[in-house]
Length: 398
Image (tube, rainbow, N blue to C red; front, side, top):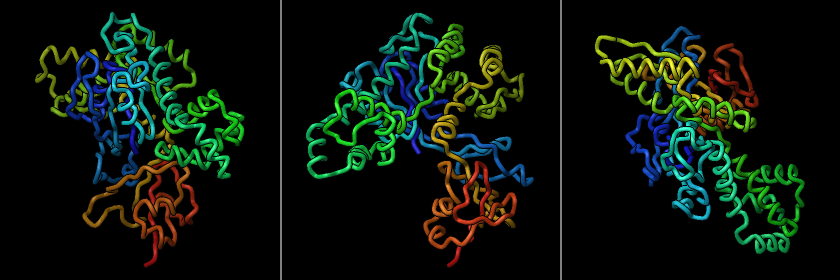
């Protein structure tokens, strides 16, 4: 799974990436600080099942804090996109290509309106962040349209002459974007399009491009810099203006500060929570105390969290509809090394016990006999639909 961070320059993308990964990246308030894409591991948060068994888990990957399990996912931060990026402006074509394999997108906007469309600093509140939501979707749609329309007449003619079904031909052409035959069929039906490619005009292609983009690159908006006074008013306004969008208030700089403070042992902080605890107040200077107090009052108390963990969780669990499944045994939750509940896997919603067996190992799937719901101790079959936070034991033959 790959989650892409997108947005115009200087909106806080790299800060959000650093906040989620604590990776060492360049952050500056001028356009195109990021030229090459940054890749790293973020973590989605799942309420750990260990507490239900009276245990403390020992993750092989990720970590667990206060019975909150953090499961790694891959993040990519691409350079800022500007208007007409799909035409190559600002090296836009390359930056768009960096998003090709992304399963979902987090669009980071500067909710304070303190940078213009090209990422150049302006007075806070003087730029409308709603314009960024509109422009980015146009760029993504035109990116898809450009690929879809390239050589369309030749493609449509060949499809008709060779008797190929359009949903199969299009799915093959756009397979790199995760487009499937069923998805193309859905688009044709929803948009009321002909099944004869030769009858599609420019408007039809643009509508299909938008449909496929929304389906294959679902997006959550991170309304960054929410700690700037004028950002709150903008946030509520764009929420009303874009009621169909998922928009989360964020402060990437606050999240970085809290994670760095926790890393240095100054505070106890669980990412995504609405508070933190200062360990030894006497070791903090006045500037550090003031900064932490500001974050607590202006961000955590007002918005419930810094939002960084929230947008990542939203991308994986709400947009992509993934569920977290723990492998375990009815009689033993530890692996051969004594690690309790060492693994937590992310599967697509609607996955079955057999899907999970194959996720663990191909041989488990091939030799599947049954599965056991460890929480209820009930035996289930291969078609049993799994639920978020299930603990499952796979029983297989030789």
